[in-house]
Image 1 (cartoon, one colour):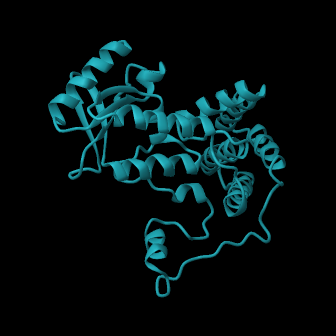
Image 2 (cartoon, rainbow, N blue to C red; image 1 turned 180 degrees about the vertical axis):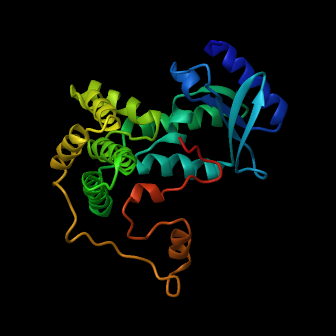
Image 3 (cartoon, one colour; image 1 turned 90 degrees about the vertical axis):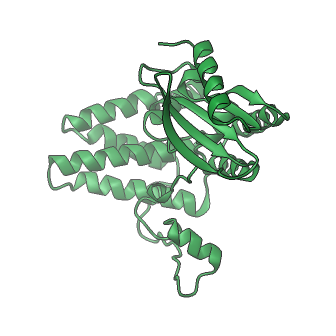
Length: 278
C-alpha cells in the first residue's frame, strides 16, 4: 500500500489539476489516520470562493478512488458544525485529522484548528427528545428481534439493533459515534477511554446473532438502556409537522425526513450534497 507521503503527493497533484482556483484543500480519512486498507480512497476536501461549490464528487486519479467534498466558506462551516453537533463528526474529522494540501490565505490551517477544537470538545450531551428517541429505537428493535418471524428477519433486525444500541451507548457516554466500520473504531476508542469491554461484547453479539443466538445482543442492548433510563415505549411522544401549517424551516425539515415520529430517528438523518456519508 502507498505510504502517507505518496497519498499526500497524489492528493496535492489532483487538487492542482482539478481546482486551480482553490483557496485551501485537505487530505483526511483512513490514509491519514493510519487505518488504510488496499481499498482505501483519498478523502479530499476543497475550499472554493463560490460556485460550483458546494458539491460532492467521486473520481479516480493515479489509481486511487477519490472522494471530493467541495465547499464554500459558509457551506464548510455548516457541515463541520452540523456534524459535530450531531455527535457524528464526519466532516469535522476530515478537516481536524488531516494533512493540509493547499493554503493560499491561511484558511487551511484556520479550518483545521477549528475542527480540532470541536473534536477536542466532544459531542454535546444526549438529552431530551433525542435521548428519548434513541431509547425508543433500541427498545423497539429489541422487540422486533425477540419476536422475529424467521431467521432472516431476526438477523436483519439484529443488525439494526446492534447499530442503534451502539449509537445510544456512544453518544450517551459523550463519545463520538459513527456508522459502518466507525462503529467498531468508536467502540474501541470508548473502551480505551473508560476501561470497558463494549467492543468485544458488540462483536460477539453480532457473531452469535449471525449463528442464530440473539441472547448476547439482547443483553448488550439491555445493559446500554440501563445506563440511560431503561427501555422506553409507553409515553414516548414526538411532535410531527403538518405541511399545511408548517413554516418554511419546518417544511424543509419535513422534506429531509425530520420532525416525524419514526421508529429509528438516526435513520432519518441525511447527508448533504457535500457531506460524507461515512
